[in-house]
Image (cartoon, rainbow, N blue to C red; front, side):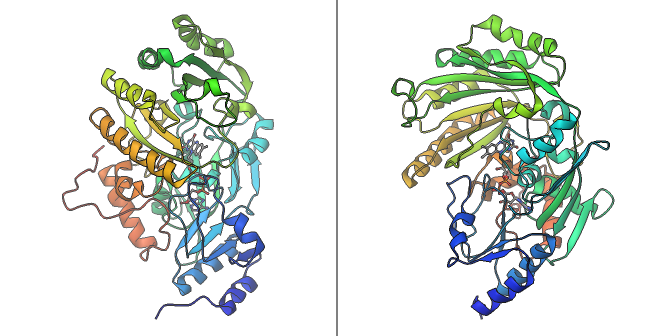
Length: 470
Ligand SMILES: Cc1cc2nc3c(=O)[nH]c(=O)nc-3n(C[C@H](O)[C@H](O)[C@H](O)COP(=O)(O)OP(=O)(O)OC[C@H]3O[C@@H](n4cnc5c(N)ncnc54)[C@H](O)[C@@H]3O)c2cc1C
């Protein structure tokens, strides 16, 4: 017989935890359930806002007894599936950050965002491996890999994790590190939120006080040539330089001047770790190639790293997808140009991030992350403020990916995918061996699939069709 949540059960949970327990009748429920990416609009049966790991454990015991699944939300930048009618654990109140500048290690609780880490590390001249936006949550980003502006120099964020504290489906708090529960430690780094609720994590920091970087903007008229030039240029640059190229279609929003709406721009972004003069020299070929419409390259304190991408800070409804690329062939460039410049395109951008470097130097069995040999991460996305826009962007991306298929590597980066796409693509994020190992871990640590709102790890078809072997 199905369990029915009653006021008595909820009152019991409230007595057990120091944090808050919210039902749809509570005033704070509405604000707390909101995701940053407004394309998910979920209505959990219950929200737990824990203060510490014991609260998380109580929530997990409660969910098991009540037959509820457990979803986790820090910021809602990367919600994969809505937590409708289940338990949502919102970690925002677990927000402590501790930095040991001597050991170059930061330790954070589950609800910390990258800006909070930056605020504590940059005064010591130390940098964490955050991504383009400091408003993204540390844990969600890192469990999915974490590619940022230091990626080619210092690798993915997941590769720099020292230990992870996690409450697993049995409601027990465990430390996972290379010394304890090492199998779980292996799978957590890349396996997302599949194995429990992470309550804290420690990771390495790097001595980076400044970077030389920023952006160059070119007119959309040179987009095709810019992509070709980018292809040649990235072959020449050192690992100290991480860069991206974006073909942007300026959205038709009221706040955008009418003349700009729907116009195309190319943005080259970069961050160089090392002397500014060297960074400037590596960027000089772009200035020699064509005069940019805007040149924002300069030496900046690491605390200002977010100004390179200037990601939106206000909640936004967006839908995106991605592919991994080995070679930026002319054919691939033609598909990008066709799909971005099509006047009917509902997408806002296509971005290529230069990978390799330190990402590729890590052995493929180091942790669950695979596809380390991909040269470029290709990401496309559009704004989806309405159900119609969502459907249009989803359909357009499907056609775009179909057209890209002959020219891409077949892998996927899970941090840049969203929603039901992961039902069939999660396995493409991993090598055959790593995926099998993840399935094994899932069966051991979460046999009832309590944590079913992260990337879906499903049994591969008998033929193993679609699984990659690298
Ligand atoms: C504007 C923007 C910029 C981005 N830039 C980058 C980038 O540069 N590089 C990059 O790699 N990614 C980037 N991302 C993707 C981002 O890393 C993922 O969306 C990530 O999942 C967000 O984590 P979050 O905690 O902020 O989001 P949430 O939506 O709160 O969490 C996402 C998922 O992470 C898991 N999770 C979160 N906390 C826990 C926990 N305590 N325990 C267990 N599981 C947990 C859950 O499965 C959850 O559904 C960006 C996303 C956006 C919207």
